[in-house]
Structure formats: structure tokens, C-alpha cells
Amino acid sequence: MDQEKIKKAVNLLLEAIGEDKEREGLKDTPDRIARMYEEIFEGYEKDPTEVLSKVFSADNSEMVIEKDITFHSMCEHHMMPFYGKAHIAYVPGDKVVGISKLARCVEIYARRLQIQERMTGQIADAIMENLGAKGVMVVLEAEHMCMTMRGVKKPGSKTVTMATRGCFSENEELKRHFFDLVRID
Image 1 (cartoon, rainbow, N blue to C red):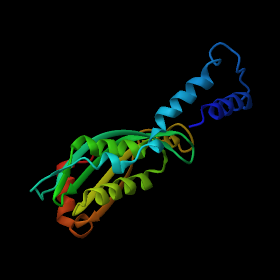
Image 2 (cartoon, rainbow, N blue to C red):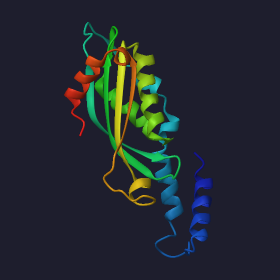
Image 3 (spheres, rainbow, N blue to C red):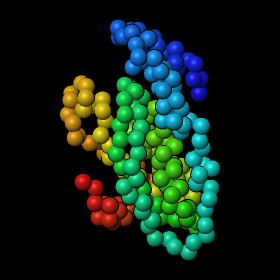
Image 4 (cartoon, rainbow, N blue to C red):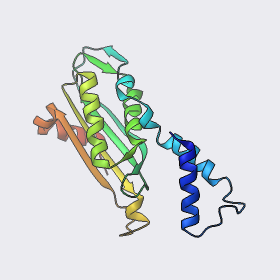
């Protein structure tokens, strides 16, 4: 990530909105934002394949669910935050992954400029491909700041997206069972 370009861009933005970039409260803002961007966009530097490669043999072929995984991301349309919870289920082949790795996979994709719809599919595809799962279901529910503090201004509204792969695409009963266990509000 190019810290200097970010700092220059923030200085230009401050000037463009009519601020004095030399005033006390803003002097270090370009540096702070550059450091913050390095953190909130670290997903570009990480590969979900590495995270999901730590697998264990398992005889279990029943659904595994990790729910209420909190995430924060940045909308690529307005560069404003959206945040919420991810719910993931997969039916293992002959391997399972450590449950923290599912949360890390969410984090990798969330820490990029995103749209929620794409992010949902990226998570599902990464789990399906890297675990050799029989099926995957990912549901994201999020509040988008571009809907709550600008534009339509509807705080509390949530966007829910879903991606199904494999046996979840083919089996409505399995999907219902997932929703019963997750109980999405």
C-alpha cells in the first residue's frame, strides 16, 4: 500500500472541502488515515487459500455452522463502511477446518473495497474450493452507512445476501435447517 499517495490524497480532500490542513486537529490526519487504510484494507495482502489450508481429517458429514461472525467492510461505491454478521454452514467432504479459519476467511474479504453481494459469493466459493466441501451456505446481514447517513437516510435497515453451493443449492430442507439453527433476525 502506498502510504505517501494516501497522505497526498487526504491533503487534497481536506483542501477541496475548504479545511485548513495545517490546523491543529488536522495536521496528523493524513498520516492517521494512511495507517488506518493499511489496517482496514489488509485483505488485499492476504490469501484465503492459506487460511483455509489448515484442515483436519473428519468422519463427520453433518452440517458445520459458524454464526454471528461480525465483520466491517467498505462499500466500493461510496467508500463508506458497512458492517454486520456472517453466518456460514458447510457440509464437509473428508476434511474440516478450524472454526476460527471461517471467521478469518470472512475478514480477508471484508477488508477490501466490496459490495456485499460479491463478498457473500467470494466467501462461499473459497470455502467450497479449498475444503472440498459437499456444500456451502453463506448469509451476510449488514447495515450500510451509505444508506443510513446519506442518501435515503434509513438507519437500522439491513441488507441480507445469501450464496449457496453444492448440496445447499439442491436441498431446500438443508437450507431450512440452517435457518432454523441460525435464526436470522
